[in-house]
Length: 213
Image (cartoon, rainbow, N blue to C red; front, side, top):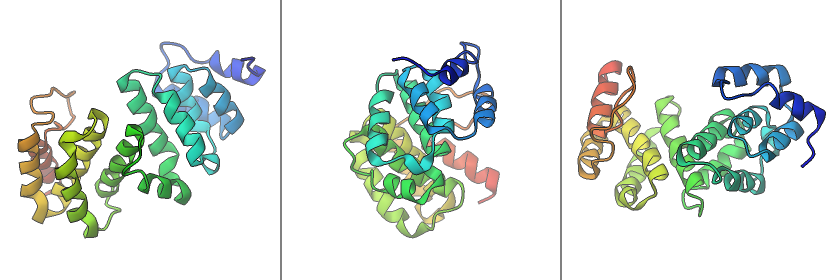
């Protein structure tokens, strides 16, 4: 595919040493440019796709286009595709009522990445203090019934949501801890310095103590 001069110039600014902060600086200079974003995405390059997500027009993110992006993400390894989908959620989908409604419809999506985002969105709402606790029981019951059957990328997001339910809703705390003990997910997993372990009993204890909840 023949790239525009603008796309070629943008790609020249990206190399193996480029960091996320550098991509954000480039994106801040470009602002919003959906056509350029689609050109960068079409290259199939991981860093170019990260930059593309930052400069997309969220108003143009239909379910059909998201499905196309999802398909492209599956060309990458597990860590990269999960990061691209999470990056899309945090930088675009989370910021518009239309795309929030799409995320809320993905609980039973045939796409595991979209199911991941359904649960990650629920967890982020609680983490950011934006979600009423009215459906905690419903969500927790679904997590308990489904988490061990799910794909790893979805398990992580379900675990994340259960953790924040346990932190902010005390009546479910022991239940969330028991869930973590039962599944054993992330038990003994090493984390970077300053990061909280993802194993639910540890995660809930540490984050609850931080907040004195």
